Image (cartoon, rainbow, N blue to C red; front, top):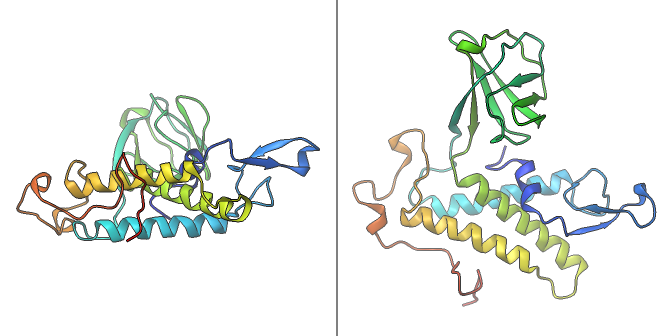
Length: 240
């Protein structure tokens, strides 16, 4: 599993990038976000996984001077369950489920039992649907759902870099000029967030202190560090 989910990559892709779909009939247009499903002449699920690995390698290379890589998943929030859960249920009702997206990994747990599940869909603002049934019964008063994922901003950076790689592939093979302004924008935003982590502006949530390996006795916001080439007033990459 990469730092971002497949759904986060889909969200990062612009819906304007689309092409005809013969299944829907002549003139029907489908977005490229239907990866490996309704559009046959685009990227496959294997492609998106490969580009996600490349994006994660870029993140690890940039942050390895400060943090121990690869990063570990952490608890990114506990959410109260609003209704009792019965064994074999495939849904859970929360007080607020708007922060979840498909492919999120969650822990359903009380004082004695727990189960790791994957979110299949957010059925409503309060309801999560899982890919597998829940094996135990849980009382709402003592049950919480914990969102287990990689610390922010890694999912955002990874999804933007992955989407940029997908645009590279599409434009290099389909469009004269071999470049996408939106792809360059995604790279710029991703590399700027990496720079903020390197500069100490953003603190990455880590499991324990041993995972922080650089400048541990200094204020990282005061140190000079090597940054990636992403600035608001210039392109994300310059030769030389």
